[in-house]
Amino acid sequence: MDIRALEPAEALAAIRADLAAAPAADHGAFLAPLGDLHARVAGRSTAFDTDLYVATVLDCLKAASLFQRMAFADLLADVGRVPSCLLDAMLADTAMVSRPLIERGKLSDGHLMKVMNADRTKATQLAIAARAGLGVSVTDRLVEEGGAEVHLTLAGNDRVALSPAAFARFSDMAASQKDMDLALAQRSDLPIDIAKSLYQRISDRASQRLSGMLARDLTRGRRPLALKVY
Image (tube, rainbow, N blue to C red):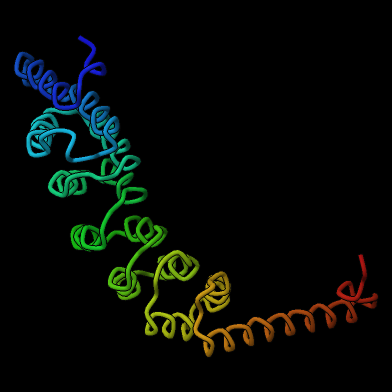
């Protein structure tokens, strides 16, 4: 039977019937048609009994291989509208399963905070810092717990909100100041006072570099390359 020809609720019933007749060890293979069904209805919870769908998926996840879980998570990340309890289960799985959801999934700030509570590795912090649409509660947490690479990623991501405290902290950082200034310069929402300070530092460094190039070339007894017109 081609379940694609059935209405969503009928397709779910057909999958469950086949599942009931299959050995428990084979249940992981049913994640593929369940994922296709979710994609087919674009995650709309009114298309079938959501609680029944979630219970069916959770049963299949127990027997699924790593590859099957990874493929299912990858599909969910692109489709979105994943029921909250199912999303929690996928995010609690191994990093190879949760990574597509963390990087591309339509996650709330609440879900991202749960992820950071459970996994404080730099890889996870970087994946979250590169996302669009983060709220201040998440970005402040990343500022507080992340290292230099996380800070630079967050500073250069103008698709997220930063609090005034985060802007001030990034602007005042002494370590890797050049990289931080270049990251902040990509943003369109810089507070005026920080923008002025930032552009002054960048101008000062550019002037110092030009002076250094002139002195180098004069020391070598040649016309400064910095004065050449190309």
